[in-house]
Image (cartoon, rainbow, N blue to C red; front, side):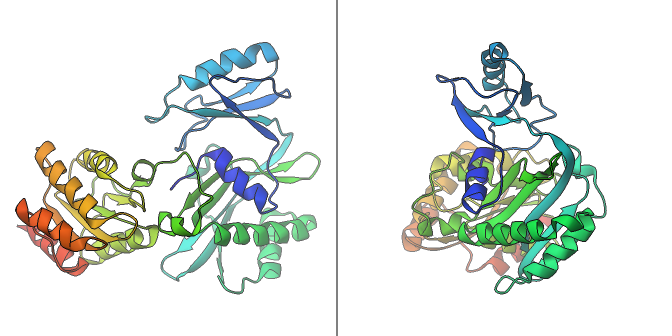
Length: 356
């Protein structure tokens, strides 16, 4: 699941990573805040700045007007339920720092750039370092990052930051933590100015404290290639990434990454299918689900409903096992929908269907 900014920052702060002072505002409670402040729309998508979802407020009189504007501003199909009002930082530099899972090496990767902020996607030549998950070399990583950022006097601060970032990543079963910008203030402090964090839904059973606004089936839908010829659906970030990789290896072009997580139901799966049919070239859908919290029979019912209600749904190639898989098989067979024994069979059949 992709967290909202204020949710991500709560987890950063709990891991001793500095974040700006902030306050949550709701529609019925736009209380006074310390000024000047930065008012931010809390939606599970990027591009808020360009879309007008971030405003600087200098007077209390302007706060209510600005809040009303943001609550009614739709950004990529999302309307905020809350806003984040934060202290306005005195920014000297904006950097970029992220930690993610590197699938090729089965390790963590620290990625950095000396240019952070709104236009970060236009950057080239990012610096990166592999991180040993079990025994990360914090001293070496901190020194390398300090040299790269030309902040040698902040080596110890950056070492602490990296150590806390790795701790936050592990404790929260994250798959991505992206701090952009990582702000260096005029008085020399290093603060996470903004944060995007993605957590592994399959780890939800370990986290009874999770109570985030994000809804799995909507926010874990990521476009990889809008011209792709196959769509993928799986549950759990690891299985979803493995499914995408396997599709590439089979000579297919995945259009998307979709982790339906541990709380998917018929409604959320139908939304996913309706998003998939928006891709113009998708000719097959691969479902690779190992049911646990999400039951196989629930997935099967969603598949049946999708075929009944979506006239232009591409052919489905389904591997579905785990909790209530026998019931799922009965539901699908009753509706003349075939289940395949494994992912390899699904990929082979999808490739033959597309090439036919």
